[in-house]
Length: 366
Ligand SMILES: Cc1cc2nc3c(=O)[nH]c(=O)nc-3n(C[C@H](O)[C@H](O)[C@H](O)COP(=O)(O)OP(=O)(O)OC[C@H]3O[C@@H](n4cnc5c(N)ncnc54)[C@H](O)[C@@H]3O)c2cc1C
Image (cartoon, rainbow, N blue to C red; front, side, top):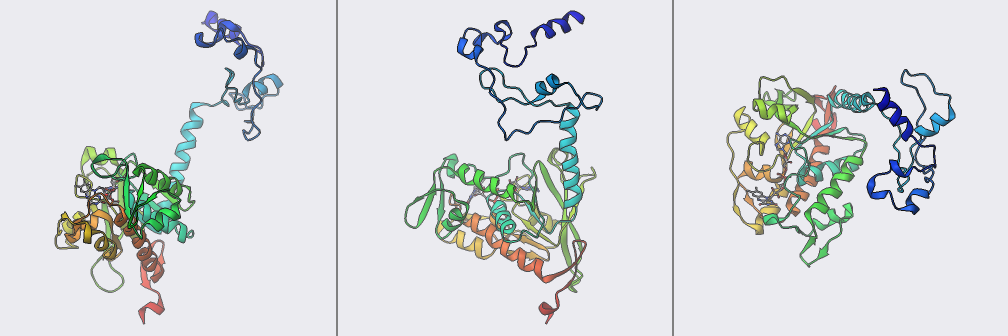
């Protein structure tokens, strides 16, 4: 052990000093590379406070200098120090805080496909006062919008949904009645990065909604109302099945927007669950492709389908038995935007107590 330690010690170099034998083979004989002094760290990189292993401050200047991060692309690149528990705690504290904070959310969005992300963007921008929580079963948010039809790159969007692309600053080619984004991934990555930058948005990915919270509607109808979602890490849900015996988490919210996509193992989740609970009678099942009418329908029909739950995107086509529209995505984007507007109207009409609907605002009762 001691010989290992001393060989490591002999390999340590003073700042700026280069030792040919310690460099990787591929860089050994590049003299320019070896003789260049390390570039000092950019001013944007903060000096990490120097703390010894047992937490005491380190006084030694040389040790402090050795702990500074250095962005030297000529072989002296050095990261600021880290310990394993720093990484573990950096993640767990924030995840725990998020779970605590979002246990009551203002609006929950199920599914981060093109419709869900369009809804999230519109809501987060229009209403920075609302806490918006997105729950996405997949590790990669984006749903089916990483490619266009038949796994090709381009994404077709019919006007007037090009206005939403302008809002997002996604470039496109104008073909007259429709526009073409050169790659669907450009749309999805742009909207995703914008949504995630809003301080009032939390995305839980790799997390599946496996049930809905349903309570007796206090607004007097005597029917059930959706009052939030029940979630679990998708791996747990996959291992144990939807509505498993493995205890899940809950998120209480007065408004839930569901964009769970086509029928499938997870798809059309909310509308299928609502049939199972008797809150809606049956699904209409998505009909054959008809581009001429399907997109207008899906946007205009995006609505609250049971108290507290709005549905849009391709999930709605499963509920209403609407036509599919093929590889044209404007309907998905505009359905998400419409759902955001409906969600704000609903939210603003409620009197709330800890995220639960307890009444309607007076002006709306009259
Ligand atoms: C058979 C088929 C037909 C298609 N037809 C059309 C069409 O007519 N028009 C068209 O534009 N595109 C079509 N597509 C392509 C594509 O699926 C959609 O365009 C588009 O992605 C749908 O957007 P969305 O946001 O409604 O749903 P999706 O993009 O499918 O997104 C749904 C998201 O919800 C997530 N999710 C589902 N259940 C849960 C849950 N329980 N908890 C958490 N997250 C969940 C999924 O992981 C997914 O990320 C079709 C795809 C298929 C496979």
